[in-house]
Amino acid sequence: MAFTVGAAADFTDLLEQVVGFVTTDAGLVGSGEAWTCVSRGADLKLCVASGEYRNASLYLKENGLNNDATTAWLDVGTSGGWLAVALTAAKAVTEMRLLAPNSASVFFDELPTAFRLQSSDDGSTWADELTISGLSWAFDEEKSWSVTPSGPHSWWRIVIDANNGSAEWHGLVNWRLFDAGGELDVRAEAEEVLRGPGIAGDQEIYFGLRRDYDAAADWFNLQLRGGSGYVAGQGLIGPSGAKNLMLWDQTIPYWCVANGQRVVLVAKVSTTYHSLHAGYLLAYGTPGQYPYPMYIGASDFTAGRRWSSTDHDTRFFVAPGDAGGALRLQDGTWQDIENFYSSSSSRNDYSVNPHSSGLMDNMRENLDGGYTLLPCVVHKKTPPAAFGELDGVRAVGGFGLAAEDIIQAGGDDWLVVQNVFRTEAEDYMAVRLD
Image 1 (cartoon, one colour):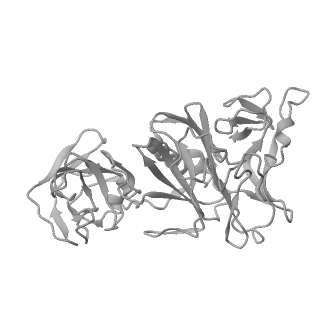
Image 2 (image 1 turned 45 degrees about the vertical axis):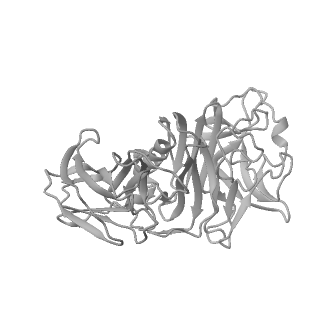
């Protein structure tokens, strides 16, 4: 297990930092518990853009690299935008290609008629490698250009200097890069799909995170889905419904804890704390009895809610609101987990105990001044069934505690986390930092 404490520049940077941590942390790599980002091509470390025009998630930066002619990356204005890739190893690009859409109504006027291909070794200082102008396009056309590279470089980007007639946007449908060995695998997908190896390295545990936002409405979220597999170009197999981690486009302090079978993320947004769980719980059964015990949960089921929501369904994952959590059952179906729905006092059949029982209202400090940490058990009331408990997450009574306090118990440090904006005694959990 490993944990990190950091500060992200915004919600996009938070996603990149979390993916970077769970895939490259030395402790996770050393124990064989590092995750793999399967939705990124083998040659792609990172993709970055000058900006995005957001509408129904059609225009995200990843769409310029996803080999899908029905989507595109778009930036606002007629020119000046750029899309860049950081490679896992420096490459000398010898050819690049651009694809046109197959419909006049989709992204045709936004295509570049003039552009520059640039290289960099640090992502800051750029040099022109190819300059093209005076282009015209036909539907379904793919254009190719030879490049005489100045050498291998770890960053490449395309800068659009003129578009195909749109007065509003410019962008790309699909951008492909080649070196002497063939096409570089810089495939990207809007949903970052991560695969965990389990604790013993014999599992394949999948979940996806996707940016979902509307800058004009001032909401910036990450959508979380669980799945049982992944196919390139098709996404998660057997996905759950999406759960939304509610963030913003400003600095976000965060705590992330991971092992090979689950990831827990806590993000501080202003004075609120939004949290996420993705991966296995500790199942009450053998692997044969319960082969894929995945639990996912985040701030809210409802898309498009702002971080400042005080709705009764905006909660933490140990006491989720309406469909705020989901458990994959033994038969492979997904069951919504919701401690509260319709109102803050309505309790559902499938929920997380003890926050579903009312017990935490009266849980006080121990006589020695310490705190009792109780397992968070995903269960069903009728007929009674207990599926398992969350790994490294405990319920704690909030008397005398505040968010970000550290409790020491069992030789471990535990981070105290409040239930989004709530600070009543029942509204706290503890996350183990080790």
